[in-house]
Image (cartoon, rainbow, N blue to C red; front, side, top):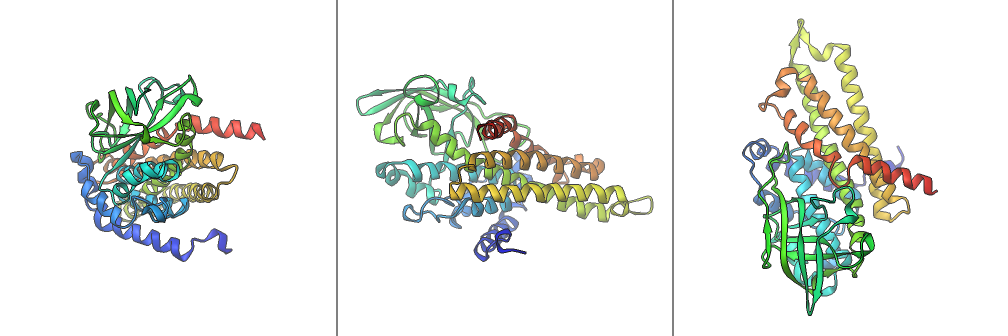
Length: 381
C-alpha cells in the first residue's frame, strides 16, 4: 500500500487521542444530552484542552496549526459519540480560523487568546430568515458612524446562539450582491444584541440553535475581519473547511451506526439463527461499509486539497460534503432497519444518529447547492 493512501504516524496519534476522548467523555453521556437537551459546555472545554478548539489556528496565535485532514479526523472521531457536539466544535474552529487568517493584529490579540482555549466560544452568522441558499442577498446592514459600525438585522439558524460569546457575522456594508458584504466580530455582550427563542429541532439537541437579533449594535471599526467588501469571500473560504468537517461528522456517525448494526445482527436471533447469517443482511452491511469507505476516501482527498490550496479545492470540498452526508444518512437508515422495531426506540443509539445526521445535507450549503458548485466548476473547465 503506497504511503499517500495511509495516515501518517502523527495523524494516527491525533485520531487516537480524539477517539479516546470520545469514548471516555462523549459516548457515555451523548444519549442523555440528546434526550434532556443539554449543552455540554464543560466537556467541550475539555476538548479545547487537547487543542481541539484551535485545530488550524496558527501556532503563533496559540493554535496547533494542523491541516484539514487532521481536523477531519478529530471531527469524525468525536461524531462517533455525538455528531451534534462534534459539529459545534467544528463551527468554533471555523470562526477562530477566520480571525487567524483574515483578522488584523489588533482583533486577533483581542479575541484569539480567549478562543483557542475556549474561555470564549465563537459562532458564525451568515444565514438570514430571507437568505438561505441565496446567501449573498443577505440584508443585515452595517453603517459606518465615526469609530463604529452600527449594525441592524436578524441572523437565522445560528448554532450556539445565546451560548457563544463571539459571532463572526456577515453584514452588508455596501452595494447589493456578494461585493457589498463584510465580516464583523460581534460580541454577545454588546448593547443591542439579543437572541430568539431556542428552535425546536428534529436533532442536534446537544447544542442550542436560535436567531441572532442585532438592533443598532455599535461595533468598533477594528472588529472588521478582512477588508471591507471581503466578507463573502471569507465566508465561502470558511465553508470549504466547514463542509469537510460536517462531512467528517457524518462519516463518524455512520461508522457508529455500522458498528452498532454489526453487533446487533450477530446477537439478534430469528428463524433459529443470528440474522447476520442471512445473505440479505450481509449484502446490506457490505453496501453500507463500501459506501462509507468511498465517501471517506473522497473526503480525505478533498481535505488534502483544501490544506494545499489546490485550484479545485472548492469543487472537491463540495463533492465530498455531498457524498459523505448523503451516504451517511443512507447508512444510518439501513442500520435502523436492521435493528427492526428496536432501532426506532431511544433505548438504542441508532435513532439519535438518524435524526442528527439528517441536517448535514442541509447546513453549510445544501446538497443541491453542492451539486450547483460542482456542475458550474466542471463547465468552467
